[in-house]
Length: 577
Image (spheres, rainbow, N blue to C red):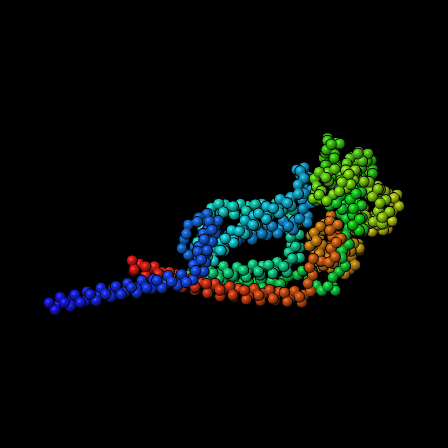
């Protein structure tokens, strides 16, 4: 009886204890719920976060399913790294296409000679490059946001295919330039030298911004190898960027007092952006821009009349397809002067709009363009004499079998002498029979289209070179030796500014109406100012990187506490059920 009574009391005590425990759990549950209810901003933020991450996954993975927070797996990280590489690849290509715009007219001319179709390829190149870079940039931002939000990285197969297409298109462009236009890589190298201080600051900003993603992954991952490797690689990259200005040599890092005189402007075939090239209208437009030197190209007709023309045939810059349809690809020199005079040399300019100037033309200018013909050298020399303009020209030898195949230089000299133009206005560029030319016309100013040599027997007074064929140090060395340096063809203000700082004497340009208004280089920094900017940028970046790691650590700790709280709440609910 006593034993039975004890068991009854024991059971009653246990029942009361369980009921008490359940009440405690229920109270704890209510308390935790109260904590959440008392912080509606937190609940709203969590809800907003969930919807944002769901939206990000929808674009990145084409899946809107809710998933738990987790560290991205190795495959996802590899694809994120590939997205970063593709973005940098397409961004570099976009930069290259923008630099190519200075010389794109030469490329357009070359394509026209090959296929007979005129197209401004810079628009296509830049548009495609911008689309590819923008697409890969959006994917990169999505992947970085997913990493920060501790979401899985499952890149959809369609994105993978498009990324591969991006790589293929950019690679084809690079291969094409390397095969057909290799000299442009020198232009890209010059642009890097010109913009290196700004590229350095941009790279520092980008790498320091990357610290947020790297720090988030660093605090979350439990892989000890990655936890050591990633910071090590990142630190090496940051240190390399911080000290890179030690190796930067840009000519525009100088004191204002050391800035050379502004290079003189030479009109390349006149003012071809404002009027048809190698016409009297183009010459007049150039003179109206205040330019004092006219650069052109001279050929000799079948009957011995020197005239202005750049291409070997007349197809691009005349209406020869209408006037002489059976002679489209004949050399210009195989036409008589009367046949050349019968051609229209301006209509093509309105039809093809090579420099996009069509909208700015007035009706009077359009009518004048339609009346343009091929000018003779005598006509241009007379205009130069009347307006005190110097002339520099390339002289093209006629094809074999031409009546003036061997005497084309003498014919040209005789034309110049007969016009009675001042000889000091003639800048003689052709290398053919230069010694005979110097004897026949010693007053001509001799311009050499080559660099000086170690054992040079000729004293060079002036050189005419491609801007890609001479370094900044060579330009300054030539100028110290009183050798004039003219560089061609310079159309963009950034390149003009770079060569101005380098010390070029003059530049040949299609854009005389633009460069004449450039009053000073686009940027000019003395070395002390650049040193201050460099140090400040590096210090701010370093502080930002440290701050990113600290903030990400705090966020990670807070997330762990929230997850622990959520787990505790689930256990309480299970016990209370």
